[in-house]
Length: 128
Image (cartoon, rainbow, N blue to C red; front, top):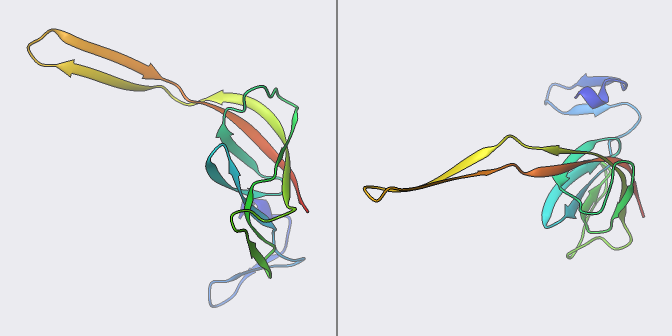
């Protein structure tokens, strides 16, 4: 709802949100084997994009579905000719998780820590 703050929004009695000036176009895109919802101007957190630095542009052509509020196109498996263009932001690391291995009465214990790395991608546009 915060993204729509610039638009005039009214709530009908059925709970449907109407936005003046049309609907937000969005696409479901597959990036590194995972699916993300991408809207123009949104920031998505994806697994680390190797070889990409902050400020680099990226193009994802594995669009699974696209909707503009009125029309929805579903790919089989991908929507042909559609692309999501974005810019790589900073790389961030998730909080550390700990994995412990332990065997009772044997004096064996191991602790492994892991911090997942992510890239932030700003979606610039969804084009055909």
